[in-house]
Image (cartoon, rainbow, N blue to C red; front, side, top):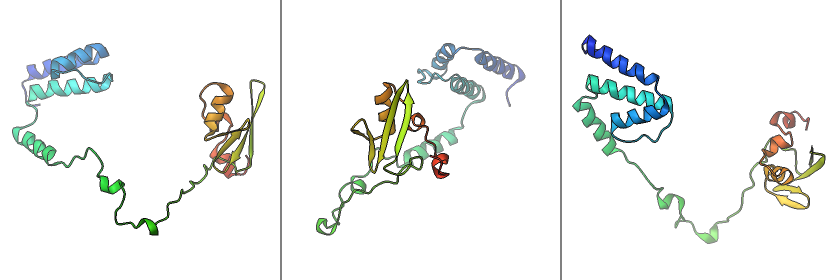
Length: 177
């Protein structure tokens, strides 16, 4: 550092004090350093930002040339807030008479056995049986979109359906399901 030894020692001492502060104290120090509240409650983030500010004030921060260049880059950036409508909207070049719209079926999750297979699990003395369909799952005569929905219906709490029915990709790929 180019500063005098006494100023360097004071700066190090101030940064050292930051490391012993609570998040609340760091948030207060952030207000003092930047003149505004931080939206963060992350202790390490607050510590680093304040320490940087202390060093920047002691050492002089960015040069005027660097500030101007940063502003040029920021002003020149093409920041898009919304996607262009033509990219995702209707394409006027397509003739509707020559186009076919069809739902494309997604590939089944590799953790799932083939459609028609029954999954069975005992939960608190109750047998829970789900049938895998082409486009969903059947449980107690009702159709569900996910195993998680079935697990929640059966237990009353949120579950990952694959974990509830003990399904993993390795078991199905090795043919053990």
